[in-house]
Image (tube, rainbow, N blue to C red; front, side, top):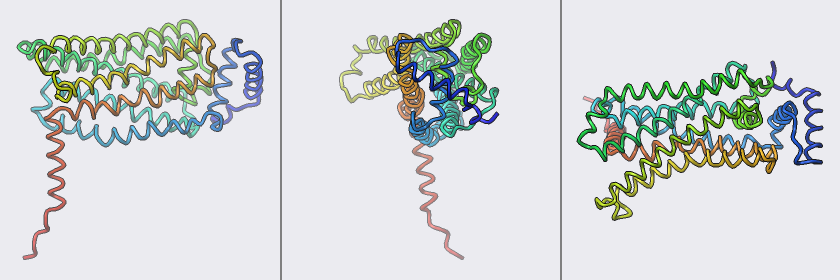
Length: 352
């Protein structure tokens, strides 16, 4: 079905009626069908929402990620001495998840901005892969923090607790969890909530977030349970960092603000803040939207900011603030760049 055929007279009439109703009574509850119609009209009218402007952050972050993430992955998987270490295996898995997320989300945002319609099955598959990649990156980030926690507090037992063979099983388990959590959510969504076909043809994640907040009680419950699981993993990361700080502050590594430990701690907490901020803004937006403090169009703007800016930033900051901080990886990258530079400037052999 052509995407622009969704803009039928029925929808436009319902939208105009809803807008007049919203202007006359901002506190009135709108019907679910009218909400769909209004969202479709907003998505089809770029002059009203300027959605194409929000395509810039994903594209910039994707370019930055493509420039650095494959290089770090090549260094990790091409060197056996690096690849066999637990921290580098977890780092490679996290970077792989982030790269997948950046690719699919930028594709989704570009198709949505260009008003390209997708079959329902393709949209569902795209949303599922995005959810798996996001959860995989988040769960692996939590595993990296736990790995650092064990390495610092239990250095003599570290190799016994987390050998490379066990790390591979942990990574497989993380992928299973990353697929199970969004899988349960999608099953509940498909069995209790039916979107208007045009909504899935748009396949716009910010609009689908708004629709989820306006869905049935089962969908809302599943949505908030998923958000709470993510929040718990972020809290686990924060608690591990806090414990590490209090356990090691007597060792003297925190005396200088410019010490490697202080800078690394600051960088890791910067990434943690950018992981926390989308959830915090989402909680505030949901509370205000459900209590009709903000309108639908404001909710869409906030959802666009969350999805296209706040959730993208940690994915591109992670390789710079985590990956390049490892001496082995940075040294290997410098060595590769140096060899390429010498190859380019080496003089051509003189003719015999």
